[in-house]
Image (cartoon, rainbow, N blue to C red; front, top):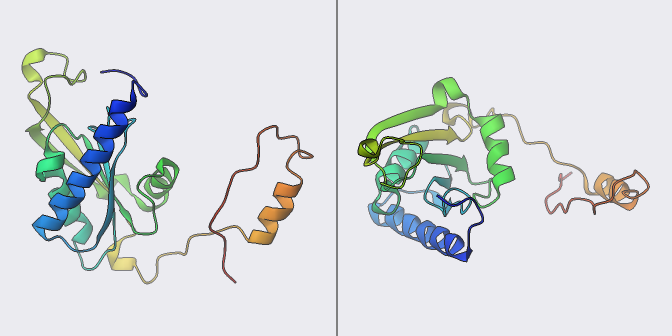
Length: 187
């Protein structure tokens, strides 16, 4: 497998696969799916799929994870399926990492599927005869459904604080421009 970014074809595959996964989930009839993204850095979109969803009932995230893992567009090779709440942009790897770090409890929020469909190209299955078989990690990085109403609110920076710091950015010794923020705390 070529390292990212190998060429523009990886981005094309990722975009097409993302659209096909969304189509499959819609066709299956699973409610609440807001977005899906097959990250190009993950073997041209084949390795990781992130699904953003609006939780509607108990077990909804587990259902979305299982259906995504086995829908026609994602069943082949995908190793990591991550569900995030609809306040997380599945195309923004930093937001996904934040959700994994603040909303996922590994001991209870990760399930494994074994002996799933893989690819003859998977270098992690070193013996060639093992390559048709793979496994999938289903990772629930959503707020716990049973605690949605009590779950702590996300902390955001106030716009005036950001603007003060951004105005002093070079004075503070940073060579790069300040990070671009688009969402701020609402009073």
